[in-house]
Image (cartoon, rainbow, N blue to C red; front, side):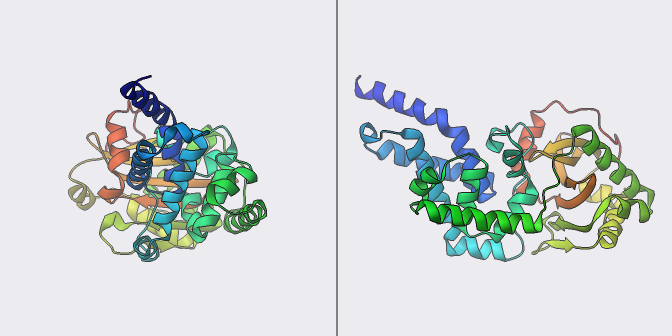
Amino acid sequence: MDSPATDRFDTDRFEASRNRLASLAYRLLGSAADAEDAVQDAFLRWQAADRQRIKAPEAWLTKVVTNLCLDRLRSAQARRERTAGAWLPEPLLDGDPMLGPADTYEQRESVSLAVLTLMERLSPIERAVYLLREAFSYTHAEIAGIVEITESASQQHLHRARRRITASRPRGGEVDPASARRVVEEFLTAAASGRTEPLVALLTDDATAISDGAGLTETLLRYETPQRIAAVARAGFTPTSAKRRFAGGTLAVHYALVNRTPTILFVLGDQVVGVVTFDITGGKIATVHGIAAPTRLTRLAQAWRQHEPDTPIIARW
């Protein structure tokens, strides 16, 4: 084939892997924008490489993207950003190709905001090994080649990563969609009632909540007892004229899946202005994430505008 035809063929090969690579990068970095940058950098390296000598393009591209993400995670700037108390994963609407494979419980769990947040406790190499094994089913031999460690080291990193994540988030199995929605709607109803007791009853004993304060605070807001979470939810979910003025008008409240997790969206017109996700374990809410900073909602808001929404839970909030 002539050179232009070869370039088109090789570009098509890369594009066939783009969504998988973006999904891996998103899980590693927790940011859609950063994931897109990593994949684009990998494409530039693919173009510059002697592609005829690359025997396994998928493995080569996986290695490049993984190591680009590891470099970013290890950078001094990233460490400062992620330890400043203001970092949260970027939420993605269900159906976004960047969420990647969803065939197994481990794959679905690995992209939840709860697990993406917990993975911040892992070292970059532990995070990479955990995701390559749990979310993408690579063997330890393959992982060793990707991140340039031994197979035994890969096994040790995976063991440590699993231990740290399960210690903070014991697996309670998946909740069926109807039950998950019912729990979320009960929470919303209880919050609007102004009563604390029904809210506490819906929360696990060790429930936690994290909010970005709509981007108005420099650090995340954290609440770590059911009673405190219930009090904050009761105050936050009750509509008032002041909240409507702040939001710019009357909102609709929709149920959706975000990062494959039950979620309520606050929507003004066709613009998502707030996201609250619920991690449910054993029929109760274990973790709540509240995100309203516009910079964290850019990709999700774009996806929502192209989405045909269901009837809102609350048409005028």
